[in-house]
Amino acid sequence: MDIALAVAIRNVGICSSTSTTNTGTHQSPLLWFFGTSILWLLFATPVIWLVIAARNQPLPDKPLPIKQLFGLGFIYSIAAVSAFFGLQRIPASLYIVLFYTYPAMVTVISVVFFKVRLSLLAWLALAMTLSGIALTVPDFTQLGDGDLLGILIAFVNALAVAVYYSLIGVVMKGHQAVTRGSAWVMTGTMIILSSFILIRGLAIPDNLIAWLSLLGLAIVSTAMPISMLNIGISKLGATHASIISAGEPVISLFWAMTLLDETILPIQWVGAALIVISVVLFQLRPTHRKSLATS
Picture (tube, rainbow, N blue to C red):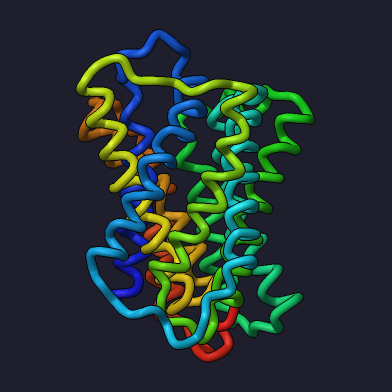
């Protein structure tokens, strides 16, 4: 359960970032989010390297595959950029449903390419997860709105995340310095996204609250989640970690109700319950732990 908690902490961090939109800037929230995501990566990457330095741990005996980790940073940046452009073309509700097909993609990749064997219970958990995601969408009337390119971009985003989940465990197999590996991934992502400064520029906060929010996003919603995600994947395997990560909409519902005073529809609670039950089922499934850990 400590490993499941690691992945859950990652979910809390990422979902918390969706609530921090009152920044004092005059841009649209989406443009602000993209520009600021680059800026908070410029904050978060040094933060995680400072944490590593403060721990004063010796270099790992087995050198990290830095080139491969940089490559994963490139994949992570594809996910970020595709999310930005996709959300400009289709409603967020539709995007959520399409994006959270990534657990299914992770499962297919694991089964086809890594020969991971899943029980019938695990497949049932996956089906419940996808159904629960669809039910947590607050506005079903928007599901039919959106163009083909936006839908394609959403699937590209999901595929990029699925490939990352599937490869990080392989790349870090046999390595114990997961936090250091995460730092290299973040560094690669930061370098790629920084090139977009020339295209979109930086969204510079204009007050202290916004700067403090940015610092919080850098630590709580970036450095911690990526490290926790990679630890979870290295211990659980890609398929299991992706199922648990699909709990993000449930946490988003909680924050929306608690912090934003939004009304949660009964059908959304049904969807949340399905997701939670699917995670429990996956924990109870007959498992081939050794196989999953390498997925």
